[in-house]
Image (cartoon, rainbow, N blue to C red; front, side, top):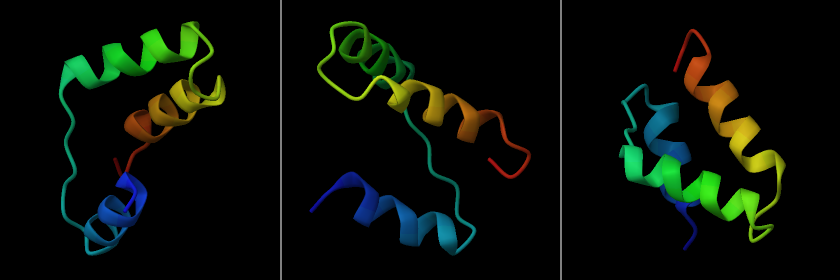
Length: 53
């Protein structure tokens, strides 16, 4: 099971989904080292900054 399959139904119901600041730091770390897709951080920040976040 991926995080997406867990999180999307929760968010679709209008419930809040939270993540810790260390998670954000880890995504930055992994992105900078090329371990995850470089757009992952941009997508996350776009979602967090959206009005319905």
